[in-house]
Length: 256
Length: 336
Ligand SMILES: Nc1ncnc2c1ncn2[C@@H]1O[C@H](COP(=O)(O)OP(=O)(O)O)[C@@H](O)[C@H]1O
Ligand SMILES: [Mg+2]
Image 1 (cartoon, protein in one colour):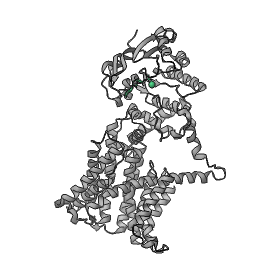
Image 2 (image 1 turned 30 degrees about the horizontal axis):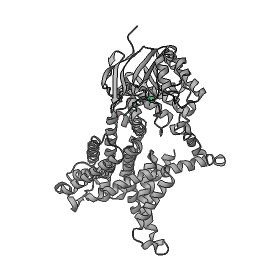
Image 3 (image 1 turned 180 degrees about the vertical axis):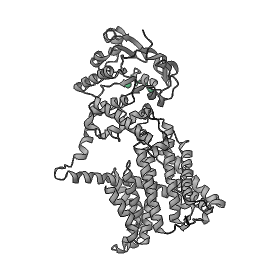
Image 4 (image 1 turned 90 degrees about the vertical axis):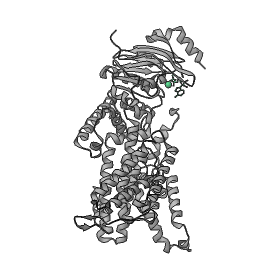
């Protein structure tokens, strides 16, 4: 196997005695869709927050593209090429869709304060570049008709796509999707599956996805990791993981 | 185009209007500058500040003291903005992890510290006996009087407006909006939270300081109590009445807050039943209007105006639900 694009090596974090993530290790290869499944509270979102550097792991190492990112500050993660979406949608709700996408371009901007205050040619050129990038994403995700809409006025399903678009504007190499289908109905979930396929195939972005909908997981993932109480239960193809007795027990044990 | 016409009207007003009104309009411009400053920090970045009067005061004293020392007028304006901007950085740094009420208290304390310093450091500031502001002299002309002040304040307003528009179409302005709406995703988009917040504080304070250089000319004699909490609250009022998150709102709010008391005073004599002789009429009515605006129209005067404009634009076809329809959808149970 070639060197992995991303690897987590024995990462752990506890919150007041609860080991939310407990010695988790996994590698993600370039071009792969890697899914993480598990019951609620298993620690899936926490893993994303560790990768985004919002939480500091108590032990373990994170590496991306051969670089150790365990101690990099959170605002530099996007610049390195890791973008994410959030389980409960964290868009900028009082801004327009276009503004949201342009904020996604933020990590690619580099003009100084004075240049921005006076809107010097350098900033102007950069703005044009960002706008082109945003338009590209708008066209890619078919969001033209909502370009100038306030996020607060958009339906939930569209917001999910906008969040995807905002992540794409950062020009990521690795995309973290936290429950892309949560809150979506069946056709919308299918559509989300197509977008994920497109992003992988057309843009060549590697994806780590947390997801509950097993149909979606089966249809887009190369490999699946099952998690419970912060520990890895199984890792393999979707079929293997679903057939794993430990995984079945975890799901039945958590069923209401 | 509308703005050009509006500007032309503003340019010729002093030709027709009386000196008193010209002076008051000049004060409206100065307040609008501080309103914009407050709007950038509170309305766009989501950081409350109860010390913008202190920034205004720092600018006013800096400019006045330097003028008295014979420094050229233009330089004193720059110095006023820089001194206030540095003060903004100073208050911005320790309050990085604060928000809401805590930030309000911290900035309030900072404001009263500044007021105390201005009062106690009387060798330089004149303390409670006040500081007489010299009339600026540019190229041998003394720029005194309300008409000059009117044009200078208008120029300052246009300058600050231009800069704010640049900010809002640049990464820095979008970073401010991002921080206001979601810190966690702002961070994940590559925005350096603390640096952006301090920058917002510095820019906002700097603009308020710049306004101070002109405000000094307006009041002519500076005393520490001209820059206390009450004035800071006026600036907060400006952005709430005008409508949070819009530059239009800051300017409309300034017009409102500066001119409403004057209008009430003018109307006083004509009120029936001896109402006009009631003490406390102005602050009372003022508070009433403020409460009404906040209760009835959270989008402020500008938000209401936009709704009216939308209604007129679609006139025979518009329906009551136009602006509420989509919101109710997002409020449905799909959000959970
Ligand atoms: N900031 C936090 N403070 C305390 N506990 C947390 C925090 N974040 C996550 N946890 C706990 O970690 C566990 C895993 O949560 P999470 O990763 O959100 O689960 P999920 O797999 O459903 O996404 C839960 O028990 C949760 O309560
Ligand atoms: Mg989760």
